[in-house]
Length: 133
Length: 133
Length: 133
Length: 133
Image (cartoon, rainbow over all chains, first blue to last red):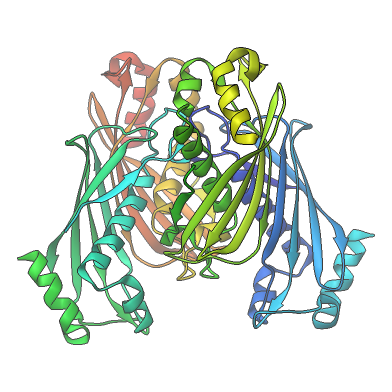
C-alpha cells in the first residue's frame, strides 16, 4: 500500500503559522479513504450497500509542528480487528521525520444497528485481515 | 430582526492572524439561517417539506480584517425577490465599523426542479416580501 | 465555571447529516479558551507575554452523534497538572445526554523551549491548581 | 500553465451530500497559490520580502453541484492588472462541465500600506502582465 500524501494548505494553518491540530483528524480520514480505495473496496461501495462506519474514537499525538506546503506522508495500518470493530493506526512523516502518530476506532452499522463485517462483507473482511496479518 | 452575532474563533484565523476570508461565507450562512429562524420559518421546516435552497452566487467585499475574539454583528436583508430567486444582502460590523459587505443569491428546488416560492410557500413568501418592503 | 455552549452549524455536518467528528476537536479548543477567559487569565495574555501552549495529544470518544442546531454543553476540567504539562478533560452533553468525552494534553513554550508554568506564571498556576483540586 | 486539481474530500461535503459552497473559496486560494508557484514566484517569497496580498473581493457563481471524490480542474487567469490591484478569474470543471466560475480581487501591502507591484517587484509584475496579455 502506498502512503497517502497531503500537502498542507494555507487555510489549514493557524495564527502560530503551523497546521491547526484539528486538521490532522481530517488528514486521517483522507488517508483511511485512500487506503480503502487502494484495497479495492471503496467507502462508496460500502455506503451504497447501506453500511456506514462511524468513528468511535480518535487519538492523536503531535510530535512536531508542520507548516504551509509541507508534504505529509501518511501510512495507514489495521491495528486490531474484531467481529464488530476495527482500529486503524496512522504514522505521519515529513522528510522521514515523524510529525504525528494517531489511531481511530470504528464500528459498522446497517440501519442503525451494529453489523458483523465478517458476515456482511466476508470478502472485505478477508482483505482487512490480510493487511492486519 | 436582531443582527446575528459571530465571535471569531482561534481556528478561523490564518497565518496573518486575521479571519481567513473563506470563513465569511460561512458566517453569511449562519446569519441567514438565524434570520429565517427569527422570521419563524426555519431552514429545517422547508427541508422537511422537501424544498432546498441552494446558493447560486455569493460575493463578498472585505473592508477591514477581523481577528480572534472579534464580535461580528451581521445584519441580513432580502435585497430582491422574484418568483424563483431571492437575493440576500449582508452587512458585517465590529464596533460599528463595517468589516465586510456581501450578497448571496438562492433558488428553490423540489425534487431537483425549480419551484415558485410564492405558490409553494405563500405564507413564507409573504413574510419575505414584508421584510423586503 | 459555566459550561461552554456550542450550537452545531450547518457547515459542520457531513453527508451523514451528523456533526463531522473532526469538529469536536475544535469545540474542545473553543471550550478551553472560554474556560481560561472565565478563569480571568486569557489566551491572549499568555501569548502577549510570549508563552504558547501547543497541543501535544488529543483523544475523543464519540458516544452519540449530534446534528445541525444541537446545543452542545461542554464542561472543561483540569485533569492533571505538572510543572511542565497540563491535561484537560471535557464532557459534552446534549439535553443531559453525554455525546462525547475527550482529553487534551498541553505544554508551555517560551522562545521554543519548555517553560515551567509554576515559575513563569505563579498566579495562573495557582488558579489552575485550585480548579484541579 | 497547468490547471490545478482538487479532489473533493468527504469532510468538504454537507448534509445535501454536495461540496459546501464555502469550500470553493478555499479551492480558489489553492489554485491561486499553485498558479504563482508555476509562475516561479511563490507566495512565500513575496511574504518573505514583507509583502502580503489580502483578498479584497471574491465572487463565485455555482453552476452545478460537485460531490465527494469529484476531481475539479481549476484554471486560473489574471483578468485585470493595475499598479495597485490585480483580479484573478477562475473556471472550475468536472469532466469538462463547468461547475463554478469565480473571481478574486487583491491588493499588495507592505507594512500595512499599499505598494505598487510594478515598482516593488518588477520581475513578478512582468510575469503577470505576460499571463494577462
